Length: 110
Image (cartoon, rainbow, N blue to C red; front, side, top):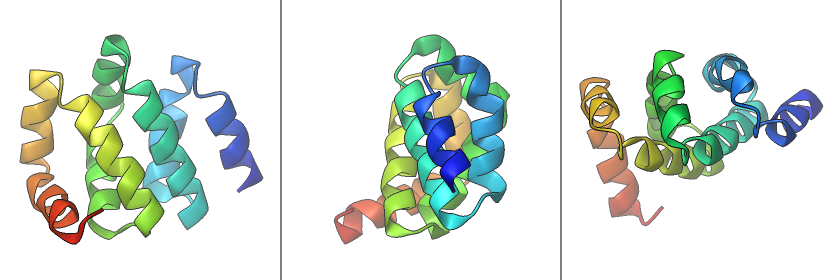
């Protein structure tokens, strides 16, 4: 988990996107939260939006929005929101089943 915190601090470097996606997919609960937070921040940048999708980040973020901790759900939803500014990502999020979890988060007030 300390490594996840360190990786979050390094998130400004887009070269870490592949590592962050892997952490979001298979890290501990805390590591997944940190990875989702970093991906949310990185997804503000247009080039990173493409890189996150290319690294396979949409699926793990959708899964965290569906079944992560409450913190992970919040960060994953933020990352997905930032990614939707790119039309290809919007379609990929829908194809990955992301609409349902996001609607549920809105309903629950998250």
